Length: 451
Image (cartoon, rainbow, N blue to C red; front, side, top):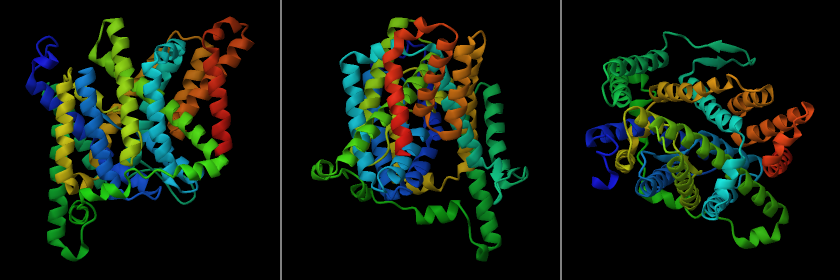
């Protein structure tokens, strides 16, 4: 374990292993959600499940040995939703075009990092954008968690109603939070993993008892899902390397232009998602050396590019820096050993896929809510911020949460910032990043036309 310098980072094998397990348990919902979302785009859910696991393992292993940081990589909710939107609204249901765009966006990110353009882009990003991206991603995850837990429901008339407090979903969700909080106060390592596993076992036992009492009533989640969710590894062939033929693009110029726009959009969203998540996680790891911090971000972005490239080939949405890394980092993870543990857990999930697929959302939703609040706390950066930065900051956060479109939110946010500075007579302040504003204008127009 000298490769990861555990003593230098003041950590232990036990702490890294438990933190890695906590990270995997927290992100395990992705293994269920990703196939569901992409199956709505016409993809085989079993194939997507295998492709997701394979992409996570390979990308995270590359990151573990290349960056030596406790970061796992997995499909993000914003990139998943963008994949679905592009497939249905831009490509007419042809997911192959979006897979190709995902693959090409990975190449773009790798080239940006290798050529040194990444550093120039980061320098030109206004500070309010960096902080608002983190908070915006937090709001997305928080809302996703409350949606999975069904804390608020819409009726047929579009009216919002709160869920029944005494429902099974809410009670088990509160049980997860209660166990985690109790163990955290006791400063026990792996509190998140223990909380989820204990609640998962109790929920499965509860359903089994109900089933035994009334077999005719059947079961709704754990048992039925377990029986019906066996998956063959061969099903990855249904989605892997499903790119359109080059002749299709040559003969259809409109689709070729749409492909360019999709590559640009996916790259933009991936870049900011990864940048915001990585920034928050490095701050949590407490890397005091500014030069090392910048180097770490550059390496992490390179891994993100490789992950996007692999995802397109495997047949899933872009793999990005995983927001749930915060759980492992909060548990004391500081090296790539924790990431390797995540890979081992993912590998095991291939052999026990029914267990992970059968896991009900209300078991992991509280963890999503916890992470969302953690990220959303970045709104504290509003304190002391000028109005020309505070207004677009708030806009980016809210727009991100409402639409799940981080890239588009940032585009409009920077445009609002530019307009405000012009109105306030501070034109000189926008010259340092005017090239980015031009790019974002093009992206905004392209997205509006596409939709």
